[in-house]
Length: 471
Image 1 (cartoon, rainbow, N blue to C red):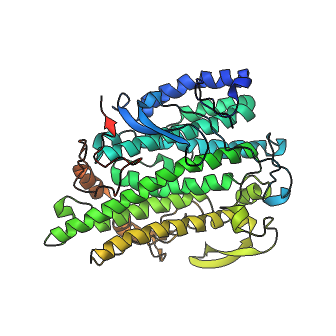
Image 2 (image 1 turned 60 degrees about the vertical axis):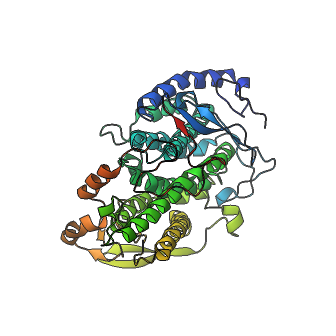
Image 3 (image 1 turned 180 degrees about the vertical axis):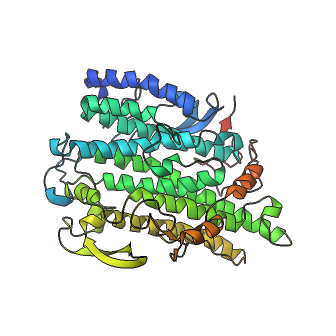
């Protein structure tokens, strides 16, 4: 696909051949920049940051690394190349040609999917806008800003689809994406996890570990869409999303590594006494972020999920390569419900269980990361195991939302929950302590006491590279 890198809006969608669309997006662009300057990284808009910028969609050569001020970042619109003869891979339209335009009967559902995905992108930038001032190293500061600008580009990807395929309604939705604010009482972001405060770097690493990993699976499901422009958009977004997951998983891994070092250094094995993040505190934050992110997949039994699959709008994770049967009108799946204060198991149709199939893959992926963290603890000779809590724990959406469970999945009364809650999820004392140790360390090659340095730098550069040149 030809890449128009020198256009006002870099793209590979032949934007210059559709002057009306080009003007609409160029009119939206100043509002986006205004939003970025207001809600993007506070105090660092004039910094020169060593960032990668998308310049193609070709594997192995798609990104260019250079110093850039974030408001000058070349946000663009990039879709994977079109595959001729491609057919819809799941649901009632299996085998039919993919749609290049929005089918009228699916217009509202597709718009809702695109808006919901698009709303998550600016939300995370807003949640993280103050973190630059407490970065544990220039390497980490650079990674934060890389995540931020790419979330901004993912917003552009969804806004392009809204403008190009949904007319006036799409343009109004695109404006609303800049009007909502994370955590705002009057105009909050659509999904709960994107209104959660991200006040320190432990939450940032867990956000990129768990919340961005949800994004991976949601994008992968949309990459199976019968609406081809959405599928091609999400396929390329997954290329950028991989770095976000790397930042989160290795960030927590580096905390675990340093915590173990500090525990062995302290005569009582107390990481907090040495200015580190103790493992029980880390476990509480894992419990909190993981359970909130499980809600992002929706209810365990969902007619909306069934409708999206049946219409061919979403698939399962790697639908074509992992599954043999793609219609899913027969058979079912057993799912737990709460009835009369007890857990009961019922069978629901396969289509109604689509959220659960996606959530299963997510849980397996998260567990692989936790296993790696635990290997670090085991190698240090420390007797402690980090765990993912039960999928029943601390849920706000789905079959368990109106009930209380401990991290092992045992049902609790409301009174028992209130008594034990502070030991299960983060509490005010944790927040005060973490704020006390989150001091910036912004000299090349230096790093904060509570986290270990990375194994390697970015793009072949050493850890002590000058990743951010502050104005």
